[in-house]
Image 1: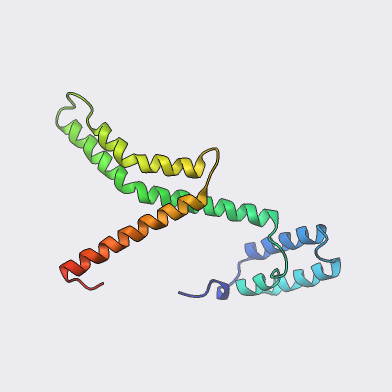
Image 2: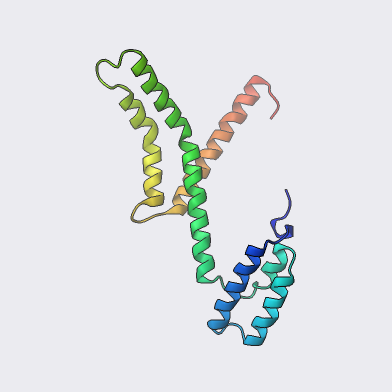
Length: 163
């Protein structure tokens, strides 16, 4: 995989850096001359690495921090839904079986739905609740992924398949 800093920079990334540099100048971290110099380099930069080099000695701006937090929450939300797809599928199959069998008696798929979607609700609360903790959610999802990969490796070894 290519180094992300060696990828070509887009005009939107240059504009974002220009806005960050303006914020740093207004905060007094850059003189107007330094701002103009860095701004010129920003518009001439061709890679993301060149853009990053222009702000290496500056703290992360509030706008950048907010954008990074929003990006991370979006990625965690997407990953949470992807990891919950199995539970949603099993729940849907159980409801289809219940409906196909005449939908009589108690709604027994509720037990399956509750058991399979409980992790989704718990993790969604960690991400979207009143005291969000994205670090804990990310750690839990990473641990689950590691357990799944280890289980798949053990199965592959038992069946003699290459890893």
